[in-house]
Image 1: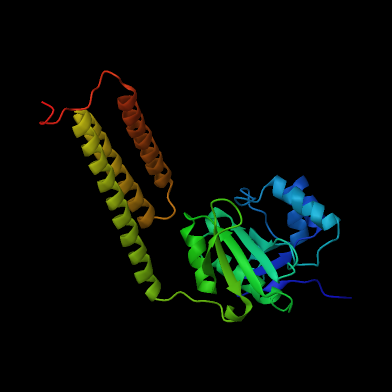
Image 2: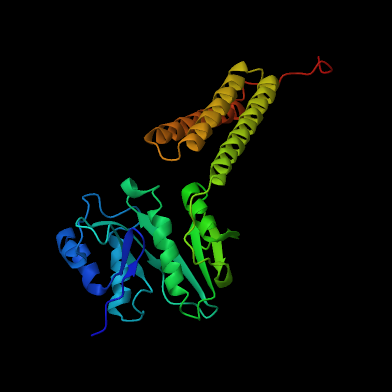
Length: 291
């Protein structure tokens, strides 16, 4: 009897999904746990991997169009221990294109993020899929604010390659020849990279804040409305504060509050400018020559 396809990493076990597993997952977590021999956390599934995604995958599996492992995999923590837990999913979006391109993505439960599990899983899956000689490159798409995902991809060997296929995303590409068989390890130099990222983000935010303050000052001079200048300064400070919070702590509930403050400040600032330009009673301040 042919052994089932399972990938082992130092801390994980990767099990390719099939139609039976997906059906069990849609119907209830208990049945899926029994099939995988693992505990299913109460907060399953991870972000971006909901019922609609499962149904689309199930349609593909039931059509029997894909080889085993060419779609999604379950990520199980502690494969050799007594306590096995499902912590995420990863996989591909189908077989290679005629050009030999395959797309990979992943999703890890929040509690298990920032422990290197995603890198371990993605690195292992890429090594496995490259056994298929028709695969020439792997691509991945991520959003600009997903700094952790971008760092993971770069460590594995991906390079940013412009706009992604999905709106608002960045495309990352890993040619076959750039894949390194050794799992990337945390290097001391990364601390410097992170500090540089923080410094650059703060600098950009400060510049943006200064630009807004200058704009507010110019408009307030024209329309003789000092309150607009104050609004611009408040907005600039809010942007700087938010950027600093994000770069200091990439994962924090307070960040959501900070972004809301930025949004509120932006909305207030925009309304203020809009009202002035619509207000016929406010005349531009006359120059000395006109007087």
